[in-house]
Length: 522
Image 1: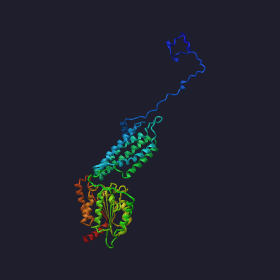
Image 2: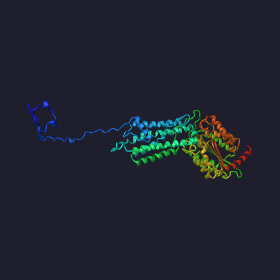
Image 3: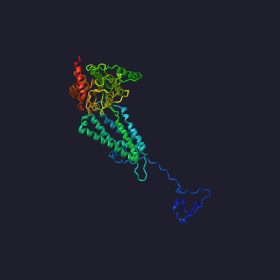
């Protein structure tokens, strides 16, 4: 049968027998040209056909353990082998929160005894993370494979996960040191322990910085951008060290201890406070010519513990009676229940009170007794609290500047607070006696919610100064009592070691004052 539709030279071949067939298999000698039919479309060149669409490549992924392992590798200052991999949103969230949880758990050990978690304080720490993420967002280009043999990078999300894990070992060591210091402060306070603490702390901070630098150099791929990021990191770290951070854990209030009331602010309260300082300053008794008078300034800035209210009230009354200072004492106190009777204990009112006393006393001959009681920090500042009123902490420099500015010559200063020995060098001079409840590296005792008075305030002022008018004698007799009571109370972080320093000029003035008070009828 002849195939009339065939264009080839084998027209007598049955298509069903051999076809269909590939034209490329037909020899050139057996082909004939075919003219295109009128109106038929021209055949298309296969080379001009568009390439089939290729689906976009999905970002590389690593397992959870892979991100942790590469982050720890970066902690050793080695380049992470993550390529252009990106963590999933769940991986990024969980790993960042897990690292934070480890540090919060270790921070719990910074507070001996029962403690409660402060959610607001913990959330306030995240400002540093937000600043660093913002700086990294600017410095790190998007995740993409790089051109011509360069190693790929994984973008901001990969940087966040790896940097969080990379700095974790150094942070855990620092938090562990601080926890150990809270429970065994004597180990780190002097000698080899002191230098070991700061040596380890400095090494860990250096490791923290280097890990960040290595990672940012890898991800930013620009020394200039890396340098800018490191400048931001140094600024954030410095700010965190300069300002005392809020602790994520706070000592739990004693269940049986009374809780102080909260201050209720109003315009009437503010106006009354302004008038109160003026009224009490004008009511101060004038100095008596030829008599070495005692003037007093009692300052209790921490409203959250009733013990400071009790102790400051006791000292103010003691100065007025046995020390003949009736009408010559200003008592500044932060407490919700005394806003209408006591001037607030703030840095501004401290200066105003010193000036008011200086205006009434004989600044060259009379004696000013300053008593301060509060919690003390290792940076030698006194804690101040009167929520919702914001009160900054009190430093020894504030008191020194106020006394020097007022021109008051003869001073007796007593600081009842932890680490209060750090006030001595700032305040000491030939015309000053200064005594403190602890040395510069130890805590004092007796400032809890159930305490009636602090150990220092009770022993020196409430007991010894009721039987003598000599501050030196009272201090000398009180120290062994304080030590014995601390042992009995189970104080396990070392003896508070109260301190005293007596200037050569003030000694004779206080001796004359003691003789006058001893001769006065009781």
